Length: 149
Image (cartoon, rainbow, N blue to C red):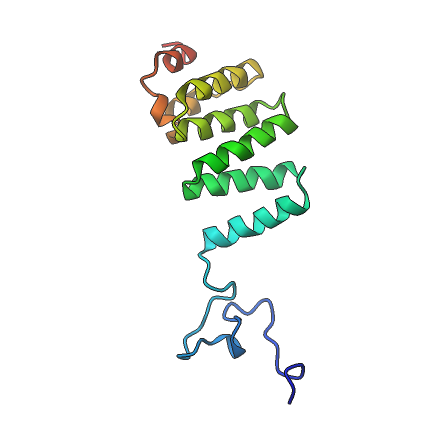
């Protein structure tokens, strides 16, 4: 039987992998997506999607969330800046940029982005007050002023 005639695993097979029958050298099942963890797999998937569709707002938004979750704050800031460039009047894009900037340690820029988000209509101050992404701003006087405290 040639390699072309060999049985192929289906995409639905969670154990399908680069080795025949989805098994490693020692007979253990391999994840179908190789050695990547789920978060890394998702990041890779969305990076490829964004590279093919650089103006896809939803793909960029999801990728920014994923890289932020992984702790890649500088990359999240860059992606959120792209979103703001694509949608300059989107209050949520500005808010997300503020969150990424705060996590990256850029307090002044984060507060500026929050101010712009509020001017554009962002009004969930309760969420802003409790959002863990904004933890680094909690005691900043300008942040407290935004909350009306």
